[in-house]
Amino acid sequence: MSHPFLYRRATSSDEAAQLLGEPGAVALGGGTDLLTAIAEEITLPDRLVDLRTIPGLDQIEVLGDETVRVGAAATIATLGSHPSIRERYAVLAQACDVVGTPALRNMGTIGGNLCQRPRCWYFRRAIPCLKNGGPSCPAVHGENRYLAILNGGPCHVVHPSDPAVALVALGARIEIAAVGGTREVPIADFFVLPSECIDRETVLHPGEFVSAILLPPETAGGVQHYHKLMQREAWDFALASVAACRDANGDVSLVLGGVAPRPWRVSSSVEEDVASGAAGAGLDDESIAALAERALYDAVPLSKNGYKVELAAALLRQAIRALV
Image (tube, rainbow, N blue to C red):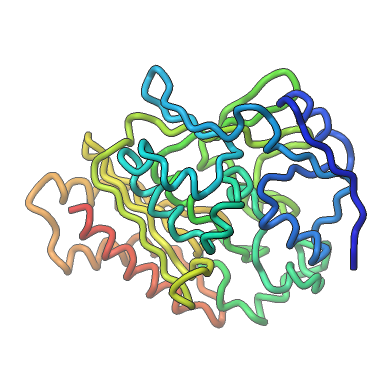
């Protein structure tokens, strides 16, 4: 079924924000998720506002304080291959390298990747569910093998972005543009849980869009590791993934993907124990296994996705070994 809409090329951030503030307007980046969502009739816009035509929105630059500013219209391929990203933020480059296919990486933008809609089978097939206006979540007693084991409920979707997991581990900030200016939020606060709001996944309001991602100099370098487990080994969304970083000061961050409605950072106490082990005599296999098990203490799997607990634990063990 075709859906008619108007198409506008934004020439400035203010113009884009004004257009996006109108009812039925939707931002367009690479379109790799949005056009699928339109075809599946989960998004039916009256107007598409193309952000790629805003001058400079695709630029990646190192600012005077060594912060790296990534324009939201930069493609995943450009971001992953950029020399400053590969040298200073390897975990992000590694996450970009495993997004979709080469064609999708060359089309999709980092802003669009962070704002893509969930891939739950029920939601995408317009079967009545909480996210599309239905009375309940059919996945609870139905097909749930790919859904959340952490932070789930009342909807149990998982966030599909690989770069988002790495960006949370790096402590990135999201620059959000609106008419008259911008605001910044830590990426950990950018995503919204279903328990907080059922019909959207980010803190974006009408008339706002992601204009840039800011990578802090404090988390550059050190030891960085990203690993993703997929059903088809390539060109697929994560069953589970992990981003692990130990910066130059010895601080550790461990973030899981594919297991929660947003990138899920393990408890600070686990991270601190890993950092202590890395700074001291290391950690033996028994200690590493105990830390991975402790990190997943709050996991609540559904009827068919308990295997994700084991996958996540294995990824955490591997990541902790890489850090220590």
